[in-house]
Length: 465
Image (cartoon, rainbow, N blue to C red):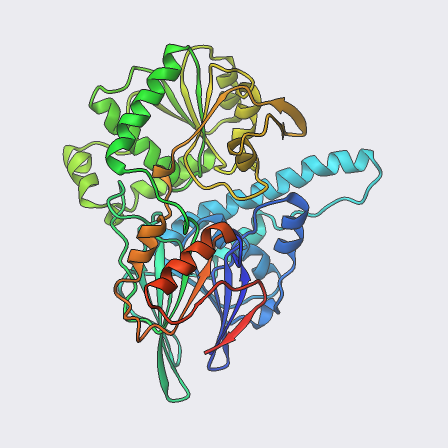
């Protein structure tokens, strides 16, 4: 068995890990790289392997940095099955189409400028037809049901608790007379977070590929978060400001809506309007509603058992139409806008930032991870002037980050993820989906606990088991 790391190796985006088992090539995730535009364009378009020789893809979850390059690989000749959970199939059905729409729209906008300059025109990475073709390859599986992908390769999905349908991947491999248990964490969720069940930790492994996004960070204490959010909203309203929240359309937006709904029910927030301005988030929320089997007990107790929709309440308006989105710019009274994307690299959030970032009464609230070189990271890091939609903008609004809303575990939670893997049995741990300042301190912590070998692989590196 061989493992070759391609995406999310010493970075946090573009997850893609290639296994060679019994002569079969299996790709764990096929994510889109997000970062500098030119670099991302090249990395997403060019695979370091022959697409047509990949026999199957196993997809941990629907986030674009894990699934977004599937239409590309299908367009380049991949013709196998894509295995995921049923909820992930439903989410990918909307997310890959949305991604295709954004590709086509962004290239159209760039090409208008290039045409005036007499430059060669670009082609989108893929289009809607490519996304539709990709969906024909999906096979939805249930959690905790073992499925034989190929002779000698058995697959079981465990609930990862990260987003709806997210899964840790357990592969039970029989090769050359040896039995191997390989785990791929995908993106791990966190205990006691709203909506979803706690992560079902992979156990008794010989090898583990594990995310390390927040490997050198400790999150806020959960008991303080609701009060901090309440006081923050009151402060902004008292100065007649607006709150702009860049948020991932799938997972983070639903979590925010859930918590705001709960706080309104408790009469802890003033009667201000809240807008979710993202067609993808609206569609994703419908998918969440259609999969109550993924909810935790608290969601049933607080909302479902009382015949309430966790994702809908009187103060909340979902916006699909672009004209309704534009009308938000005319509203002067305090309100909250939740809009995609979370890293502020595209989507309607760019227009809301451009219209609100120069007002010191306003708040830009970040509730998730921002990769290096993204607009979100630049604002978080305190840059005084940023480029939005090609125009310079002074950052005068208040900027705040609340890491509690992260769907990724912190250092202690990552270390706890290993508790069901005996040190004498777990031969190698590969840390992926993390930048060096996060992953390397986590590696040191894991080694200090007595695990044998912890590797932080580079892109392209190959390891033989």
